[in-house]
Image 1 (spheres, rainbow, N blue to C red):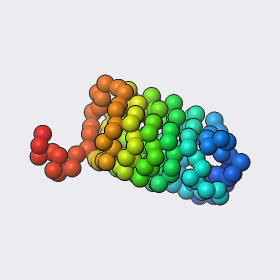
Image 2: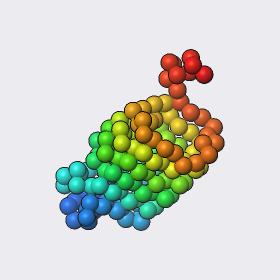
Image 3: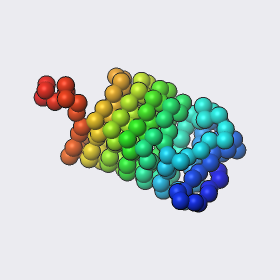
Image 4: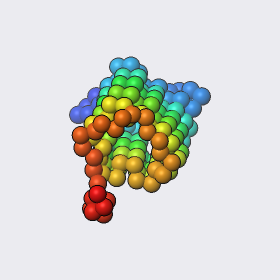
Length: 153
């Protein structure tokens, strides 16, 4: 994994970074921006391991064919971070507090997400995720709704 520092931190994913379908970010990485670059077919990634990542910025992993995400220290997933990741099934994020708008929209196969510490869920965060089961008490302080949904409350 190459790291270049200009105005923004940019990580470039190479073929040697993916081992048996698993991409593990170094423990020094705590933030992943939309500037993430792939020098390899990103469809080879089936499991994403983010050991110390705390924030994933907007539109970072759009359309990735990943099946499982393991991020024990992840606190925030920004808007559309995993938009249209249609193969995604499992998201292990016990520290997660904030999910942005449309973060998992189009994740048709999403079955499990850990929301034990969730505080905020953005509008349409799980749109089209009909098979979703959550782990947690959903003691959130804010949840986004569409105009149609709020009329039915």
